[in-house]
Amino acid sequence: MIAGRLINVNLDLVIFDCDGVLVDSEVISCRAHAETLTRHGYPITEEQVLHRFLGVSDREARMIIEREIGRALPGDFEAQVKEATLKFYAGDLKAIAGVAAAIAAIDLPKCVASSGTPEKIRHGLECAGLYEQLAPHIFSGTQVKRGKPAPDLFLFAARQMGVAAERCVVIEDSVPGVTGARAAGMTVLGFHGGSHCQPGHADKLRKAGAAVVFDDMRQLPELVRRVDSHQWPARLSC
Image (cartoon, rainbow, N blue to C red; front, side, top):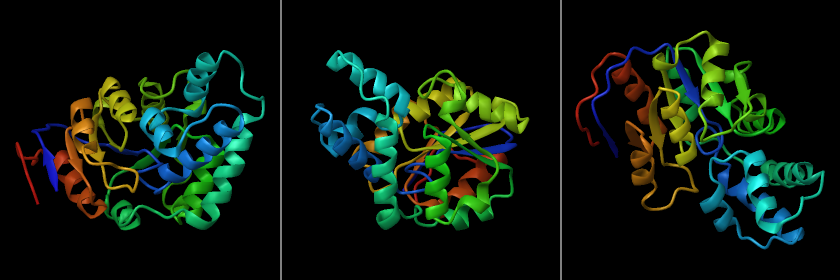
């Protein structure tokens, strides 16, 4: 199913989020965070992590949790989460269905703008067999002062790629991601086909500012083409 509203923009760059858009990793990441946080005295389930911190950078999430518990997490907390995540990646991580073919079919420059660390992004893309399609244009939330939902990462990616913000389209699966991309002045296509997406997720993305929501990556090349050629109708379902 696709639903959207009229968009009028010429495109020079497609910006992909990573987790939940390129790799079906959000559930795995939430499991790693939940296990590590619980071990350090902050009991939380992977479902609660998903609900509270989807799309939020690890740095921002850590600041929120430390304010709540009134103390600092261990200095190597991120390293512990990374170790748990990579352990789960090795057996469970897969690319989002159809995304490799979609990337190949889009005849525009592409990059990745993800809240994850460079190491995590690269490892995830390599495990899913997507790294060579997108390297070296991969940007991390660690490269900017403020993570999503601030616009900083998207604006940084556009500057690095030499493209004006208004000529970028962003593929996002989270409300903070959509919010940040819209704050950057970019068009957003909201993807809700990952295994972590619950009923009603498409409406959340739309309310956050996604111009189009869709749940099948096979639809993406045509959606990008229609945005780029000003052929997006007021509403379309398929």
